[in-house]
Image 1 (cartoon, helix red, strand yellow):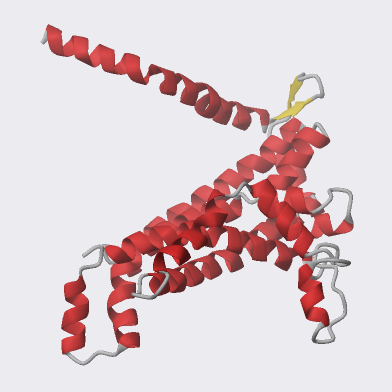
Image 2 (image 1 turned 90 degrees about the vertical axis):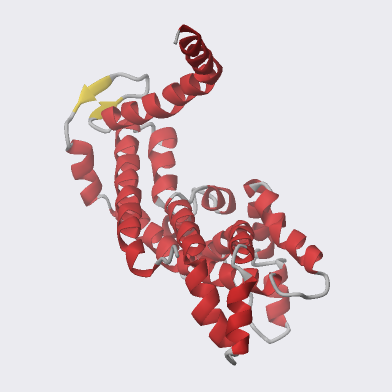
Length: 293
């Protein structure tokens, strides 16, 4: 028993660095952020307890409401697009085609590219004066479009980049899920005379639902926390930024630009509640459509 206890203590010693890091940078920061949301925090860190005042102001803040609607747009439109496109691409890459290894490598490139590089690339593509997208559209007689400067197109432009950047990682996950499906199911279906579409919708999709559920959860959480592409692609002092702002970018603006850290903490708490609620609902509803057999 004494020897086993010694080994137990040595195990805690090995995991102590990561436990300390998690405790300081995650647990302590998490609890302190909730505490700050009930305070008015000054520029130099002085705090005044205000209770629910920050949350009351949020309910009357038009920019917060805009950020909330934009975040709902990114998640509500972006997640279905990511899931559907990822499933289709993963299914195609799982077929026996020439150059399969090349396509699988190419699709993964965005996943290992820095968000800053992706943002700068797409910012150049969307440029209204010399961007490639407007250049190709000009061939069809389309006038130049200010993709990132027009309030009517800025959200869709950001959404395109978000979906493009997220698909690559999700395709790899779904491809792994496809390869775990036993070939005996397909062989039995072919013997029974099922065609390609029947096999896809009656066998592939049902057996892939656990992986699709995981992809949906990860994509939803990522979309609800979108920050980097908006911050890097659109100037903060422009009108289009207000039409593209998300909850996380608004949190950053209020906390670190306007130095309203208590107010910013309240924004992050609301964001946390939304993410937690949506994730809990998804786990609750998974029993109706996810097949673990």
